[in-house]
Amino acid sequence: MRLPLATLLLSGCGLITGLDDFTVTDSASSTTTTAGGGGGASGTGGQGPAACPEGHADCSGTCADLATDPHHCGTCNHDCLGGECQGGQCQAFTLVEGLAAPANILVEDDRLVWSDGDRITVASLDGTGQKTLVAGPGVIQRIAMDALHVYWTNAGTGEVTRAPRDGLGPSESIVSGQLSPHAIALHADRVYWTDPSDGSVRSAMKDGSATLTHASGYGQLRTLAVDGTSAYSADPATGEVMKLPLGGGTTVILATGQADVCELALDDTHLYWTSGSGVHKVPLQGGTTVTLAESDAYPCGIALDVTAIHWTEPAAGTVMRVPLEAGAAEVVASSQLEPFGIAVNQTAIYWTDLTAGTVQRMRK
Image (cartoon, rainbow, N blue to C red; front, side):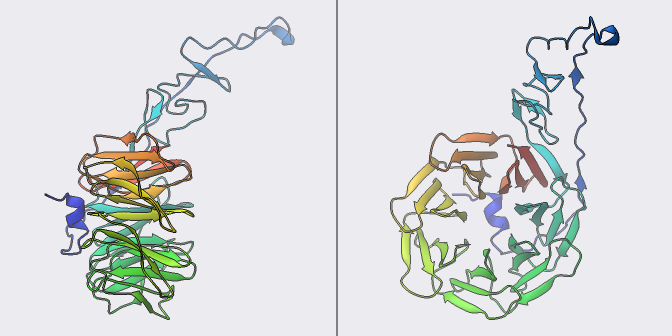
């Protein structure tokens, strides 16, 4: 089976070159109309506000067509953040364009971060104020972010590196001498990473001190999620999704038969993942695996909010979501070229498009 470009780009087997300058697309302007009321002299004999025409809603004095108004889309004061409103639904909006091959993306507080080959960029949530945290050498694999820094693994240099997330300081290598660091995760005061070359999970303090090896010899581990007691990953050689105790102990096999696991995510009760067969979840303590959505379009990027799991399907050009407790899968966006990384916050969904070279945003 031919794998999509997303799989090849992140395999760590080659260096992406030829990065072009990128531009930020300004939000399209739009106007709303207001219904004027007839005024009476000296406050007497006047008429109240005129009724809105049929098919419009009175949104605090503004008559809005909820089917098409980008500032009142579907309901009053639901702004599409630059995207169009069609049929009462906000549409995707190109936030950043002109990138080489954007892959991973994170959003937190007022910061948006994405990787693009050997480059990592941080920006405001509207794509403005971009600052380059690193621009080569090497091959950026995965990124992670806390309140102070952005962290990343570099398979080309064998390093785990960080830089201030405000872009106001230099990057620093905190761990070196790794074979091929890949997935990365943060928890408390430590940074964790996998190395597919020896099937290991390692960690260090966020300044790079006190390095530990938590597991090794598990195959080409390319995924990682961490909580206070365990690391979670998947072994592509066996198709097993695993729970690895950080303090040592017996590995728990949470699921089997999971080919092409792309990404993991977890909340307080469940582990979620995308694979070659769809989107799945299993209790953190073990139990029955539940398939939330079936798909043969190579589901990959994954992001959770309090109600839903979101993912990308590079082969189908779609962005999808489904309730955490199971239900009907919904198409968030279609006609994308190759959506890959995805991130969500309270108001919007962000994703990268590898082939289009863009960062997209869509109001929830």
